[in-house]
Amino acid sequence: MKRRKNEQPGNRYDRLRHTMVDQQLESRDISNPRVLDAMRRIPRHLFVPPKRIEEAYLDSPVLIGFGQTISQPYVVASMTQELHLTDNSRVLEIGTGCGYQTAILSELAKEVYTVEVVPELTERARRVLKKLRCRNVRFEVRDGSLGWPEHAPYDAIIVTAAAPRLPQPLVDQMADNGRMVIPLASDSYGRQFLTLVTRDSGKVRQKTLYEVRFVPMVGEVEGR
Image (cartoon, rainbow, N blue to C red; front, side):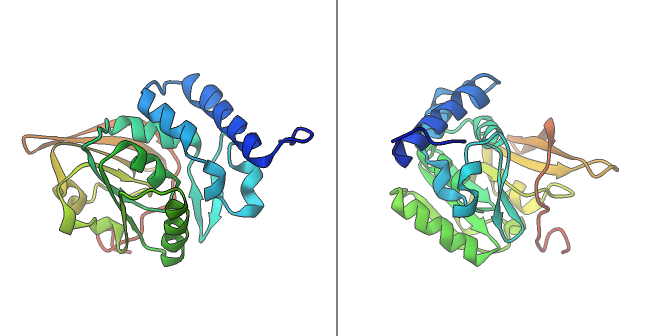
């Protein structure tokens, strides 16, 4: 991505962000206007390491250190869209990472509770979200496979690490009529599939959406 002559960095990233939404999201199946607007507003380049900033708006994940990545823009938008968030939603995020997905959620929900096992990533994300004035986010360094039961139930749960099976503590923390999106490593070939989990009158249903690739979940529930 080459900078135009005399173009200011802020203007350039604004242009790249709008192009990302137009070409990577709207041209596919991202149609929720609130999700699209949030993706247009949040400056993705602030969440990647400086040496990776030229990759911020590409149609691919980006390494952020500590063996973690910031997900591909389409995957962020798709997972968010599946949650059906409203202004009154309370959301639990498992895997803060760089905080980009957190920032998108904060634009769409009333409260966001985000959990991360790497303290350095939590602090980095906290700094960026403070700069962006995201005031409805609470952070915690803890085992994500156990969720954050103190603030349950949640209208929506989003998991950004792949689990070999559905963690029961997360299911238990879903509100009635709640929705969860989680990558599950659910076949013998090691492939992962993004899964939508819904809870209605206590009955839990799962729906496979599409194949994905996430870092593995690390936590007590998974025996690691």
